[in-house]
Structures are given as C-alpha cells and as structure tokens.
Length: 369
Image 1 (cartoon, rainbow, N blue to C red):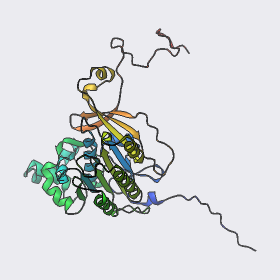
Image 2 (image 1 turned 90 degrees about the vertical axis):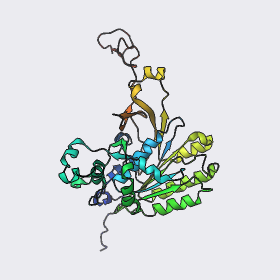
Image 3 (image 1 turned 180 degrees about the vertical axis):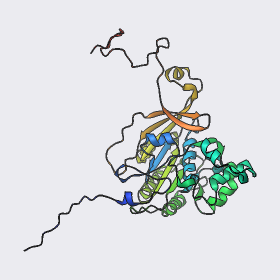
Image 4 (image 1 turned 45 degrees about the vertical axis):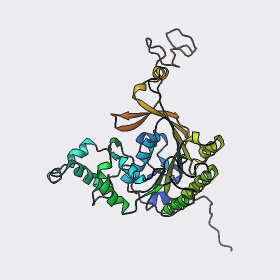
C-alpha cells in the first residue's frame, strides 16, 4: 500500500519577523515591512510608520528656502540617536562641519528632574547634557531603563555643536559616521563604490537584523559638482542605489532641485523614488494665502507627499491628505499639520464646503434630505 503523502502548500507563514530581536530604531509593519523613523513624529504617522527599510526616499527642494535641510537634519540625528551607521554626502568641501548643525533630542521635564545628581551638577551644564546623551555606559541616547523611543522630538535650537569633539571620538572612531564630498567629483564611479562598500555592511537577512544603515545625500544635482551635466550617469547611480538598498538593511534620503534637471530627467527621478516628498517655501505676507489658510502666520513652508513606498504589497497607500504645513512649535520642534481652510465669511464663521442643509438650499433650519 502506497504511503500517504502529507499535503503541502506553496504558501507558508513567515515567522522571522516575530522571532527577530527588536533593536533600537526599528518597527514592524504590515506584510513583513520594517520601518525606520524619519526623525519627525508627524511624518512617521503620515507615512504609516516611517521610512520603509530598503527604500529610496527622494525630497524635491525649493530654490527659495532650504526647508529640505530640516528633513535631512532630523533624519540624520535620529540615526545617531539609535547608533545606526550613517553615510552623509554633500557638495560642500568639508561635509563633517554639517554634523555640528544637527539638532539634539529633547528631554522631557520629568526625565530632567529624575536624572539630576550632585556629582553631575558640579560640572558644566553642557557636560551634564552631554553625559546624558553620549554616556560611555549607554548604548544610545534614550537607553535609560532599557527603553528606546522609535522617534524623538528634536530641538532645532540646540545643535550638537558643543559636543563635536566627543561626537567625533564616540562615532567617527567607531566608523559609525562616514562623510563624502561630491564637490570635485568629475564622475560618479568613486561615489558609487563608496555607497556599495557602505551598504555591504548591512546585508539583508530575514532571520536577523543586527544593524541598520542610513544614507543622506544633499543636493545631488548641485551645479557646482563636476558631474552636474551628466544626467544619465546620475540616473544610473540612482537606479543602482535603489537596487542595492533592496538587498540591504538601509534607507537612503536624496534631496535634489528639479529645476536643475531637464523635464524628462526630473520625471524619471521622481518615478525611481519609493517615497517622494517635496517642500515649498511660503511667500512673505501673502494676503491671499493668509485669508485662505488658518494659522498662516505660524507656517514656515509646505510639505507635499507625492508617493509612499509600497514594500511587499501591491495595495496603494491612500492618504487622508497630501499637503501639510510645516510649523515650528515653540520655535524649536518641527511639526506637520493638515491644511485648514479659513472661513469664507468671517462674520458668519461657516467654513468652506459646510452647509446647514443637504439639499443645497442656503436656508437655515432642519436638514432636508
């Protein structure tokens, strides 16, 4: 009698996500997707969890204001908070100077009072703050009591400048931060090899994620770069970078100015991106916008979410809104809010699109269906 065969299926449940240890700065998402934080709590909520691991994020700059630097700084600072490897490329001669402008994580008031101690108060205030964030016996910025925040609030008025010396000793000597200048590069071969070497440290392994990498590229098509007229070479590097990210535990954020590219190249760049964002400056004292938008005086710019990464799924992400206002809460913390339209008639206070009846009649009273 023939032995009975056990029924097998080509579909098997993946238990790797549940069994893999949780490391700082990672969050499980649907369909086995892993997220890293953008450094902005509101942006993480808008995108459904943050930047998907293995994705390419592109930010379209605005020539009128450097609002893209706000996103880039928070993204880089969040990686340092979680002790994640960072590769920063910039058209500046010395990109390492940019590290001194990164914002520091804000500390809640209850934590400030609980960590005061006489021995620490004898030293300088800066040294006390530095010991809290860069302590030698700590694994990260927020590792007290074994707790790790996925996303921190960063104080834009408190840069990491006073801690540059110890920052260099703690991170640069451990090869956690790499800086590359793309100013005098005649071609992109050297920079491509630099990215490939960096990403080789984080091979994709479904069973375990030991470390995560971040790549931040500022103003990739800047005119002062020697390769600025090689649009096809830049496009090829972005395609190669996206392919390498798919097979590694890393996320790359690239900012560029679309007006410096031809219309066809700009469209191709936007198509390559997994997550596509754009920032726009607000004109000063625009009376028309001030009457249309509530809280216009507190806005510093606009953020538009044009595309959200679809990793391990074919279902598109439908957002409640795509355009958000960029505000500085207490002139320190970066927040994103949905645009609210001001009332059309200030005397009546009725908002645009709001009516007292469903029949289209302007008469007030009970609802008429």
